[in-house]
Length: 371
Image (cartoon, rainbow, N blue to C red):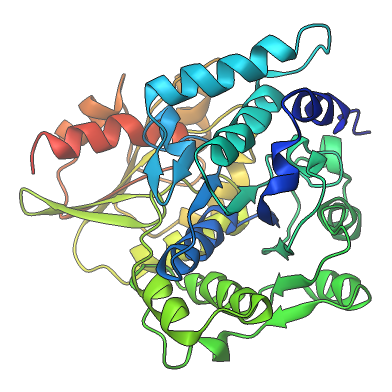
């Protein structure tokens, strides 16, 4: 079912001098919450005085944002240099762009003097390019639900097996927001489950009813790794994940940006919108390989109207198809040829842009021009 392999990335890393072997790596897999959990871990490490590289995907607001050192994106010059070297040594390997990026990011982190690296899986875990790394200090599993079933399997247990593939002779901490099926699976592997009670006494500065679980996962992991409470407190308090229930006050309106793109990820967004007073408008786009009905089902009845847009990129679901499915769940359905047009015409105190991370760059640019 899954024909991916860690071999190409491993070969590139070896040709680059095996930079991963010189880094202390926290590796994160899961369906939802990976990016936020990576942000929590990164900030804890930075507050502990550890120079830290972070590799997450997909891009939210810019390509370079995926590759950061102590929270600052790599410069164009650094990406051209380190990724160029990774690309050069990949000759004859038949590596994908993501495999080259994975090796290039680790190489950049090592060459720029990082001690730690926080790495988010691209898809699955067992055969994901990021799992080519030689050793890890900690394996982390966030919330698991059905996703990429054509590659990972069509049951939660099968998907858990792929996620668990990142465990390589290292401790395992698991987000406690799991189905019973997932909990049983990871319990057999000796996982430390991150209870939200761990958040007592810590200040969390992010929106979303599930972010406490992500924070608790980082807290539990930091305790396993021996970091003191002052670093953990500072890191958790100062984490603000990009593109995940970000709320901007613009010209008297609340503009919410959320990259939710699978049904489980829409739960926090739906809860957040439900608690907002007054008229609400949703701006929605969806990629062709995502569960559009499952996503829109979470939003049904929560807003006064929805504006369908087409996501940028080759995997976009067409505007006509997106709007057609929207009509199954909303009475008031409009269409717009761009996010800018949709935001310009959204006449409501609360506007949520959601359905894909690919929508958020243009939305953020629209916001920044008006702040």
